[in-house]
Image 1 (tube, rainbow, N blue to C red):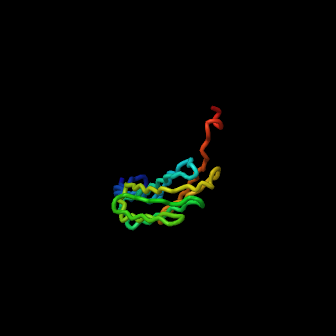
Image 2 (cartoon, rainbow, N blue to C red; image 1 turned 180 degrees about the horizontal axis):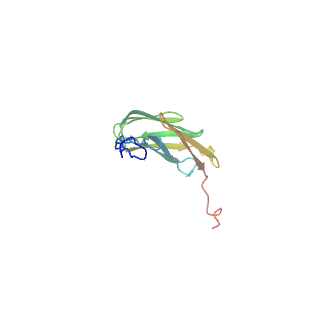
Image 3 (cartoon, rainbow, N blue to C red; image 1 turned 120 degrees about the horizontal axis):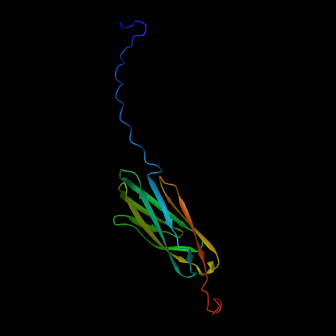
Length: 153
């Protein structure tokens, strides 16, 4: 058969090589904040909150600013973070500045608060926020001391 004649086959050119696939973007946000709140606290006592800031990205994030607000009747006493960070406390909030957080790493921030005696039987809320991440919140029930007779002894 001659090329172009009826019934003749024409050889096809080999397929062009595929372009390399683009790397997949990470699933979810690069910066994530989580709040570990005590489930119970005693009126007149101290409660400890732990925040974890995680950089799920590959690059270093710089100048991260984190804030945690506490409910009425709860007063921040002290705040601390990892080496090199700066922490300040006010009447109803604590603020941290993290100079840098490498990709794939986490930093833990700790806030100690004093719980007012008048909150017995109440629930207080705390909210934490990080610029570039979704905010998070948690609740803590304030319980009064229970005597042995109330426990059934």
